[in-house]
Image (cartoon, rainbow, N blue to C red; front, top):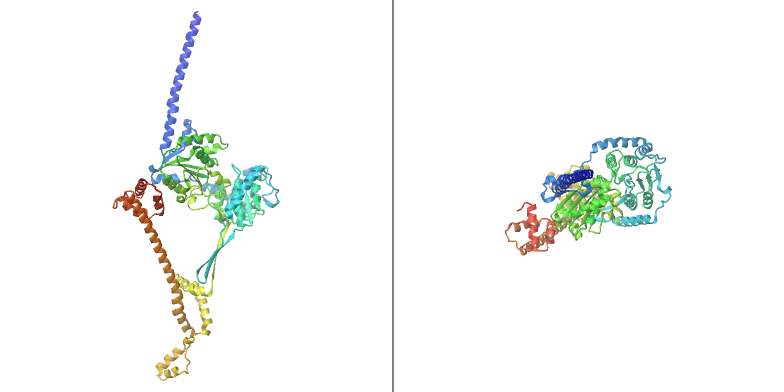
Length: 639
């Protein structure tokens, strides 16, 4: 009996201890885990500059949290910092790449083989193969059909970029035109590091094929067995590639730039790549290799503008479509206006990221990405223009109406049914685009990238007579006498040739004519004058005739006509601006703005901007117009 009591007592003590332990564990979890997580998530959203990657220490996945900023609360310095990309230290990268570039220049194919064995762990027998000698790649029918559709669309879009040659006659007898010629030999780099990209082979080779480039070298890292990826080979043969260089990295770029025993030298190199590929392109375009490049390249990036009508599932998928390229990819979400469920978007990002085969890359990319809150679409697109993204997705209601405000972007995707993936593969546009903010001054690859434009001018004799005096005068102003003489000597030769056919009214009197005889009777002084007069050449009279008649009537007439046309254009422009100004003022008065008020006075500044005027007319109600004017006044410090 006593034993039973002791056992019961012991069990009671154990249960009490277990309850106390569970209680303390629960309190600990609440105090040290749940509460800090909630506080951290809120802090990351409201504190500019806080790294979301630090949240992982508290149990949150990096894929579910992005730094957040509100544009209206950022200073100019903070805004400039937000648009900046992570700095790439090219000084150390150049130190690694320069020896490779020089080694390939000296040793050629042998160096390419050595670096391919070192970096790719592949021993090559042949560095370069001629595509015509390779057997056709065998692909799954569905895969083949997909590449065929992509090829057709890319070809159709790029062939439409051909422009007809046009001759312009600026003045009568002065004709100018621009003729098109292809770049003779080009090099195309198709990366093969973390992912094989046969789509890039199409994006680069198709416009080269349309342009008519005679030599097209495609460089791509080989497979482990030294072969070429069959999908890349299929696309290369279809798009007219002539040679395939089985190498990647800086050694491939160097081989195409310098040329080797087996690799033809190219005149321009295209294609994306990592920082070592970019460094090699930058070094070689400033070297004795005499090679050009398409554009500077950086990590992939996307900026998504979403409003309350955007589907969170679609927004998350678009963000991840670029994040999965690599851990250094740039991903930006811009929230336009109110009513957007950011929690739903973040939940979808986390859910989809965890299901991706390359989710680790995407998660790391998202850890240094951010979300921006804007008050409306105008502010959202203004930030996008400042950021200049490689890919711009506008997933908002009536997305097409905002196209005219876009100034800086590599490629744009409008509306909820236009994912970025279609441009990457098969819509027809090119996916080799400027990154790292270079969309402010560079365009993506197009047919023009593979062409040269040569200007041609042709003048008749009459054309040179009309234009020549102006050219001679400008050369005289610049002190370039040889330039001037290249014109005046031609005109003088023409004058000398025409001396034999002088008009009768300008014939020089003969010395024995009555006029000459009477002159001789006037004494020695008049005799001297007559002798001087007789020495005048026929060309002098003819030149005087040309100067008085032709230059005054034809050249001055053309100049007068030009002045009249300019005055007419100026007057028309002033009338259009005046009509537009009056329309803005009328709308403002109808909205209830009093004449003489600050808002009324601000209209004069607003009408000076074509974009602001168009946005003003987009406002449908008087309240919207008044609010727009006041926002404009605040932005321009007019209040």
